[in-house]
Image 1 (tube, one colour):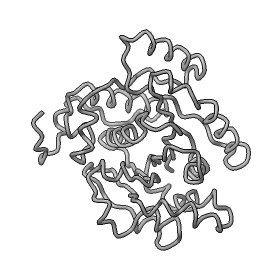
Image 2 (tube, rainbow, N blue to C red):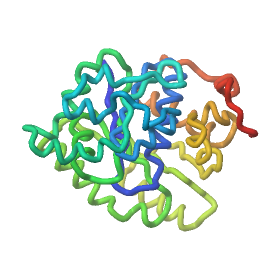
Image 3 (cartoon, one colour):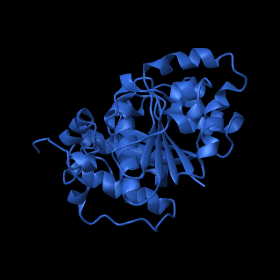
Length: 276
């Protein structure tokens, strides 16, 4: 039985998609069956893993509006053991079409239910909003993983996000929990970042992960090559950080029988033509 984790924060640019791709990739490399569900109409998770959004035969949109089953929309990725239910701009119309659907907040949950025996972890990459698609993700998920940038503006809107989580838990998904809070784009040299980090830890306590994701140029470059960081540049600081975070994630889930990765370079994809 799989665990479903929504990667969400209504603020854009905090590393949701980067975290979804790289956490999923490392968890898969550690021997767990993983599925990414891209419910962001921008489809960055889809293109970031190397798929052409224009060439999709089926997508999350087709699944949500009932044109096909979830299994029909799933495609394999460049990472062994990791699949994706991709997305493209068609999904932008889904919120309008779902308005007429009874129990529209639960469509994604019904969609994912048949997949829970096929995967160990299902990660949902949410759009940067608290609209119907994100509500669907919170209703479907067992927990929510919140990436937060270690800067002042990251604190703005945090109460709104937590209020949405409380409402989802009260009315739609009583078992929803906070999986954890991940500090991204982290620069410990900044006094402001240290101050914001202290506030985040004060607010979330032990839910904040010990490992943090630093600012790293390679993390920004990898999606343009359609690769997770472990294949694009496995020895960079961003890759090392996401590996450590993936281990902490699995440890917190008491899933300790994962495969230890001792040689990051062994994960590099053979057709990587980047000069790094």
